[in-house]
Image 1 (tube, rainbow, N blue to C red):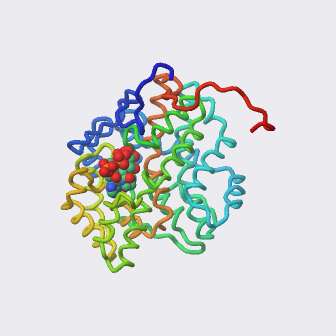
Image 2 (cartoon, rainbow, N blue to C red):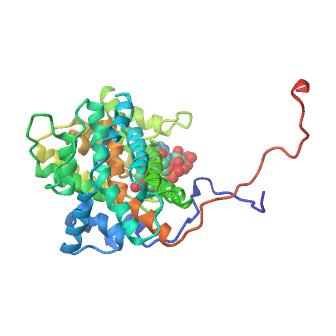
Image 3 (cartoon, protein in one colour):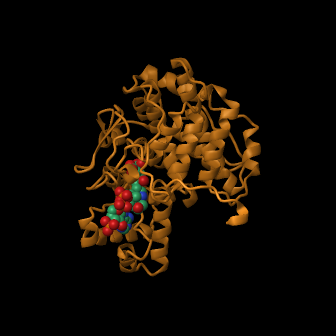
Length: 392
Ligand code: SDX
C-alpha cells in the first residue's frame, strides 16, 4: 500500500496547491478574485477586465485593457478546416461534447499552445484561446440550430461579439440589447473562477504533465459537463420544468431529494465549500428578477424556483446538511430569458470559467508544480500463480 493507511475520497480534506488567485470562505459565503470582492467586480467591472485580473494578477489600466482586447481580436480566427469537425457531428451531439472536441482539435492548428516555454509563448496561447473559444461556443450552438458558422464582428466589445456570433440570423441585422449584454457580462464574471473545483483541478492535473493549454482546457470542459458540477445548471431547468409539468408540486421533489433510495438530488442546491449562501447565487437571484422584468419576460419557472428555495431553506434535512442554492440554481433562468437553449447552459458556464482555468494553469506552470500523481490503499488480491486457460 506504499505506506498509506488513509484515503480522502473526493479530496474533501486535501489541499492540492497554494494559489494567489481566488479566495473562498465557505462558512461566511465570501468569494474574492485576487482580493477583489465578487460583489464589487460583478457590479463595477466587465468580463474582459476580470479575465485580465485573474490571469495577470492586477486590474488593467485603459492602455493594457485595449492592448489585451486587440491582441485577442488578432487571434480570434479559427482555421476553416475546424468546420469539417463541426460538420462531422450529428445535430443530436451535446454542445459540451462538441466544445471539448473542438478545443482539443485547436491544438492541431495552433501548435504554439503546446510547447510553452516563454512568457511570450504563454501570452500568445492565452490570447489565442480567449479569441477562439467564443467562436467555438457560437459554432456549437449554431450547429444545433442548423445555422451558418459565422465569425464575429471585431468592432464590437468582447461580450457583444459573443452574442452577435450566437444569435445573428442569416440576412437579418442583429440588434444588441444592452440589458442582455450587461446580464451576460455579469454572469460570465460570476463564473470566472472558483479555486480548486473539479474542472479546475482537472485543468491543473492535465497541465502538470506538460500537456498543452488547449488540451488541458478541453479536459476541464469534460469535467465541467457532469451534472454534479457545471452540468447542474442544465439539470436545474430540467428539474424545474418537470415540477411545472407536475402541476408545481415541489413537495414531491423535496421528498425525492431526501429519499436515500432515490438517486435524485435537488439540482442547484448544496456545495462542497459553501455551507452558507453561495454569494454568486445571491447576486444571480436579484439579477434574474431584474433581467426578466427589464425584458418583460414572465416565466413561471422563476416562481417555482423561488418556491422551491423557500421550502428547502425551511426543511430540516436541508438545513442540517447546510444545503443552500448554489451558482447553478438561478443562472439558467436568465440564460433562458436571453433565448439561450437549455443544452447550451453549461457551455455558457465554460465560457465564463475560461479565464479562471487559464489563470490556474498558468500559475501551476509558473510555480513548476510536479506532475499530479496521488497514491492509493491497495485492497485487491494478494500474489497468486498464473493458471492456463485450459485449467480455468
Ligand atoms: C458547481 O466546487 C465548486 O466550486 C463547484 C462550482 C464552481 O464554481 O466550480 O461551485 C460549481 O459545481 C456547483 C454545484 C452544482 N451541483 C449541483 O447543484 C448538484 C446538486 N448538488 C450536489 O450533488 C452536491 O451538493 C455537491 C456535488 C454540489 C456537493 O457534494 P458533496 O460536497 O460531495 O456533498 P455530499 O454529496 O457528500 O452530500 C452531503 C450530504 C449527503 O447526505 P448524507 O449522506 O450526509 O445523509 O448532503 C446530501 C447528500 O445526500 N446532499 C443533497 C444534495 N447535495 C448534498 N441532498 C439532496 N439534494 C442535494 N442537492
